[in-house]
Picture: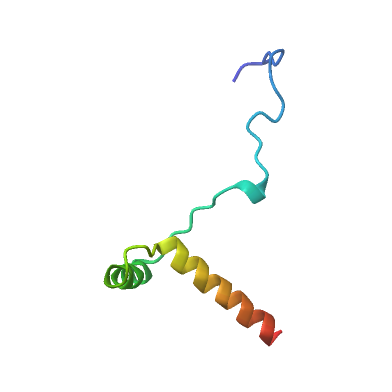
Length: 68
């Protein structure tokens, strides 16, 4: 490392993104992914893994709200 760095032309926050705007990758276990991919292929082609997983998470949230 240098003793000093020149930040004269630096721009603060240039690469900052609020956490709400970040797409966070979520990795499924192989068993789960295989199950969902098999079901997607058997159904209409307009289904996507993202839609299915998001739908399941929304349902789980609604169930949790009702139980609370």
